[in-house]
Length: 109
Figure 1: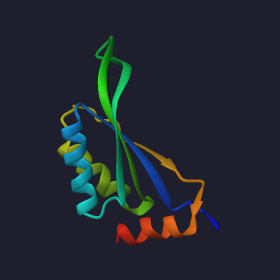
Figure 2: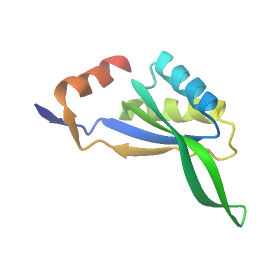
Figure 3: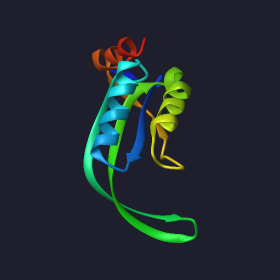
């Protein structure tokens, strides 16, 4: 049964390496700031940085959490991240299976 997911978020964070993503992902799950961090290796990013167009290989994390854990999660990611300006974009979850959303809630308590 689907349930509205207004209290839940998917957070996108890019990292410089798989080891950095694993370190951050493990830490935020251990600290109960997230229920899960999926790591998608070897993405290519094109972006503007300090007035120049750059291109680099990165790793993307999809982090599942609750809206109430966002401030603490963002603070932790920024402290652990190697970038001067790490990506931290939170997307609202429109809906999800009731049991999965409940798992996210319990995992982040």
